[in-house]
Each structure stands twice: as structure tokens, then as C-alpha cells.
Amino acid sequence: MAFDNELTVDIPRETLVDKLRRNREKHKQDYQTALEGFRQSVIEDLEAKLEKARDGKDVERNMPNIKPESHLEEYDEAIEMYTMTVEQIIKLPQSDFRQLVRDNWSWKQSWSTSNTGYISKASAR
Image (tube, rainbow, N blue to C red; front, side):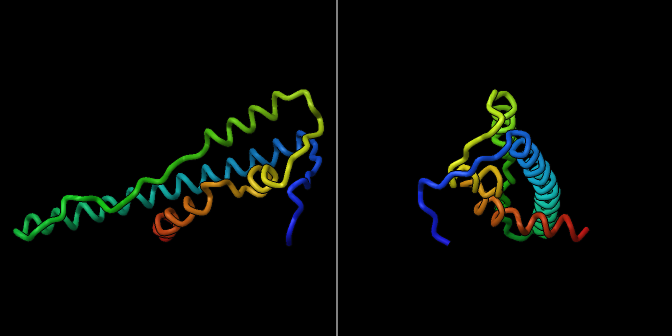
């Protein structure tokens, strides 16, 4: 569906803040799960490297695991901003609607891609 760049939507402030809080909570849960999976991966990698070292085999010194990032501060900033505004109806352009309501931030795709394996690992426990 193609949208005109000028398209906006009027949203009651409390509806927007509530949606942001729910999106934040989901991100927090996903981040904590990804962090748990990340830690499990690091432990497995270190144990495998330690076993190789003890067996006298070559061991790579780098760690392939990338720590998940938390974007809670971005949610907190948006929540604080919209909580403090005196406006009761918020006019959002499509790009802001996509980010704030649909939870599709500029970092979301790469964040999800890099953390899917960690989330799966932690959830399988």
C-alpha cells in the first residue's frame, strides 16, 4: 500500500502512551531473553575453547558473539515526551506512526535479525 508522504493520523495522547509502554515492555522482555541466550552462547563458546586448550589444540581467541543492545532509553524518551505534552490529541506523520505505534524503528530489523538465535536458544531452555 502506497501512502502520500503528507498522510498523518490523530491519536489520543493516552492511547499513544499506552501503546508505547506495551511496545517498551515487549522490547524489554525480548532483550532480556536475548541477553540470556547470548550468555548461554558465550559460555558454550568459552567451554569449547577451554576444552581445546586443555587438549593442546589450536584455539581462536576471538569471540563471535555480539551482545544484544537495549533500546529502552528510546522508548523511555518517547513516553516521557508524550506524557509531558499538554496536547490531548497527537498528530503523527506516517513515519512516526510506523515507529511509535507499529514498533518498527529504524534499528528494529537488524536488532531482530541479530538476536533471533539468542532468543530461540534461551526459549528452548
